Length: 277
Image 1 (cartoon, one colour):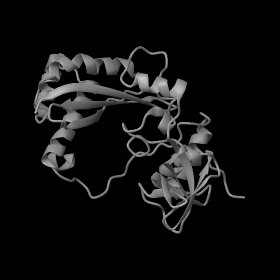
Image 2 (cartoon, one colour; image 1 turned 180 degrees about the horizontal axis):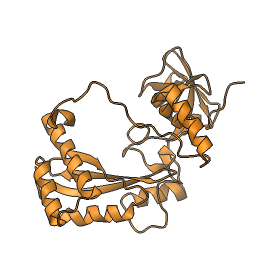
Image 3 (cartoon, one colour; image 1 turned 90 degrees about the vertical axis):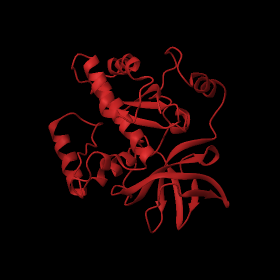
């Protein structure tokens, strides 16, 4: 197996850009790493391209040796670009061996892991707001982050959109792509949709009337026919019900449209969610 290409993906959010690096191989196996650097995006993205000459044609199944080659080639300077490429190679190794990466790195260290949750990218910048938001997150636990972002209709990559959706389907056409930048992969399709057509399905926010939390990929029906599916869900204290996101055909994408699913109904709503009553 040999590395054939490095690809970069920039995903914007209200505070900073996330930068992901995909390592492609001649056997079709790909790996994903992250090179997010706070407010710095383009310099790191260009560094990934510069490092490409060190890794094209190399074996991705030897991530440590490859990282050492990059590290020495950069005169012993660590970099986010090199780290992203290394992690992507570990991802490829794990997929090739059909084993999670944590097993390859020495095994499980603990049964549970507390993670850092920050769900207040938007809003006032004063300390009082941060204190109130942090108290709510602490009271509700990490799932509060999922609930808050669903209430605000903030999609997560890998959960609510992937490489399979074009920006217009995922509702990202105004925040994640440029119509003035030079040539890039997929530009022709994006421009054609913007100027001449429309997508068949689009991402929407949903409120559920069901006894249990709907699972990802649950089918959404109308008049007995499949009209879409659920991506992710969570319980919203503000709405006092389960909410989520999904993709539905444009005929039923307008707010107040009602669809059926196993055990109940789903209603399209215009985010942000509001408290009942």
